[in-house]
Image: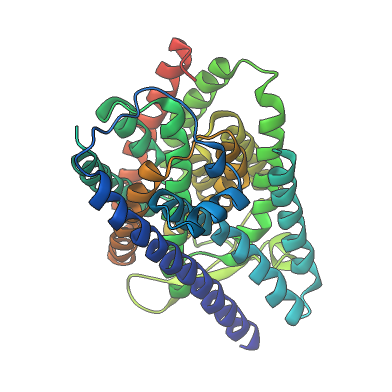
Length: 125
Length: 278
């Protein structure tokens, strides 16, 4: 069953990229959470009222810039962004794998999903 | 409450949400949103932003195991992700033009009804012969059965399931949560997939559905790092435990847990819709 062996390879790679995304993002989150708690653990936690995040935490470049300044919150937000990027990476990996296997139908399927995803991101402004 | 105590509570609550989410294919927003708003007094907008990120954590954390072990079907997931992402875009487009409270009530009622239907119709899985369209699309597969060895399955009625997935995506775009429930139900009752394949493939898909709308919530300032960070870590711990439990669990037990959670969710939606809180 060559088809089945191909499917297993695909499953291994997809599982692998999901695991990588999870490990990297949680490591970055821990890196931010530890200094955050060391500094602010005794402060009063208040999320009663919605104030909206500062501009730096609303865009990808903003988060990167803040994390580079070693701000614990910025580092945590960067970890969160890496997690959000994981499903995208998974769809791109599928696209590459199907292209490699010359599976035209599923190259098309993966492209359509990617297109709709990017539309959602760009259209959101 | 101090930040330390708050973080510890949020971490443990998120672990529970991740466990339930990974076992049921629902993502866990149904647990996390009430915990944040009612339990910890967090504003609903922050709660939604946190839950969205937590759903991605549940999905990626558990799917890493489910895909490797052969439960989630990657082709079925990807093929129906076209429908759910298009549906999500449609939902986002409609969101400003339709009364979401009416939609929440309708959707809650649909959930309650279809859960009852899934109990009536189950037990027929695994006895069908290959469907020509599903075969052409490469959707047939097999999964590790409890008895050991692989058990083959053949998806049925692909076009109807595709339409339902558009509805599932639209519901998530309109209401923020609830796409997992319709995904599981349409794979279970329409495609007639084995139960574990339905829930784990839904779990695999919800990460992409949530990521599709993550950009919107991030740019609106709904995602707070002090909330999202402990939630993600908790959910990852919980979903890893859930993935281990699912492998050895009986389908009937999983179906029971799913039904209980969806009943709570359906009632939650109807109540919120009637109160105009959506």
